[in-house]
Length: 297
Image (cartoon, rainbow, N blue to C red; front, side, top):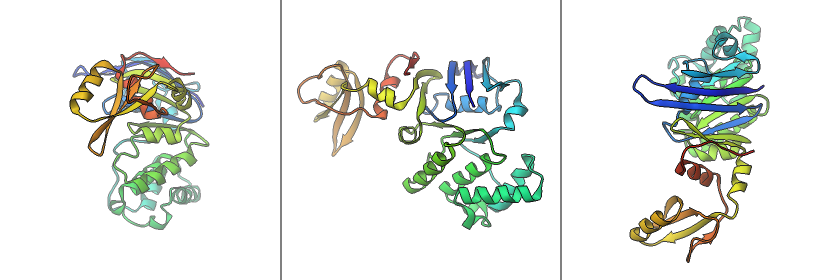
């Protein structure tokens, strides 16, 4: 299955231009959409999910015109928004069964088999009769994936799914997404670099509504090979001088001192050591340069 987005733009009534001529091609794999909060990721996800209209552009899911054939898209789409509501006093099994009916799965035997399978797949079987209000954040997200999988969709969109989860819940959720992504197309929209690094063979970075990079994480990292340097900076004054003179990509506090990472073709100077590039470097490098598509193929 191929999702083809061409020239998508959206400006809200308050003047905020959320999408600026976005074009992407997403194949049958786990695709990461990476960007800071406010980058336009949720606008793009809602548009693909047929929940809002763009000002211009087109989206095709294989031969389905997403913007014109919304019902056809919804029959093959699973969607886990950043925030989703549930009836708090209803159990997971009853809620999934109710949602399955709304998805058109009206045969009782087929519906029960599908709900049971999804509860097992998301490791919620032991908690199936408990009220959804008693679920932890991670359990609620896994329930969200279960409802997104109803009807055996061919495309699943998940928007900021690991935000707010503790490390153990995040790992469980990422493992679940990984198992799902082997068989269908999954678009993972997130501002968390590690999620994309761990899961996605293809990715895009957007900021302020513009596409900054599209390609594979491995190729993006290869492009930075031999060009990342690190140094521990003792004083704030020295940090400000280096930020003015060099391409400082990021700065982290270590024991009260700043460790900076610099992008340069050769050593930036005394005290710098070469370091392996990480996907976080790719992310911050693209955010720090003028917005223009930087394809990596």
